[in-house]
Image (tube, rainbow, N blue to C red; front, side):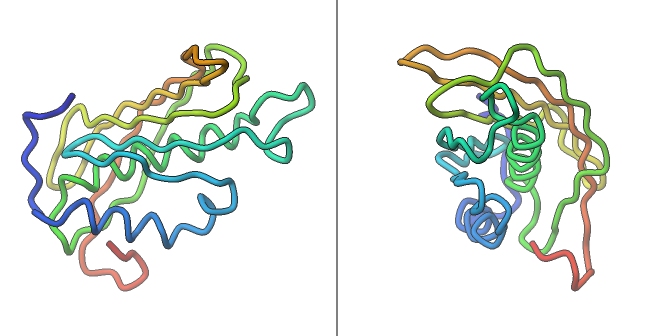
Length: 152
């Protein structure tokens, strides 16, 4: 756990949860933040047939979208209250089919910065109480200040 990180905003959790609540894409897929700590965020979503690909696995685009949000919000936990973040690059590796009753996406800050932050993500499928790694992500975030179209 990234307990060594100190958030610049003492109200980071409320700010992150409010911002996530404005993400209609995450609401559409049924995702929710279940944990927000300095430098780490966990998002969960239930299995839903309308989010699958042709074999019945959670679609890779859905895995990527939720994992991108987990990584972005992990970085956001360490930012000042007036700073937004945008993903400027990510790479995802699918390591197993995303088959499960629910899914956990965890973003963990590797290296925070004033301008650029590096975050790693892990996506897990939870099926009958067993958890399996299904994807990994490496994300680069950019801090954004003073833009009305990028809210924090």
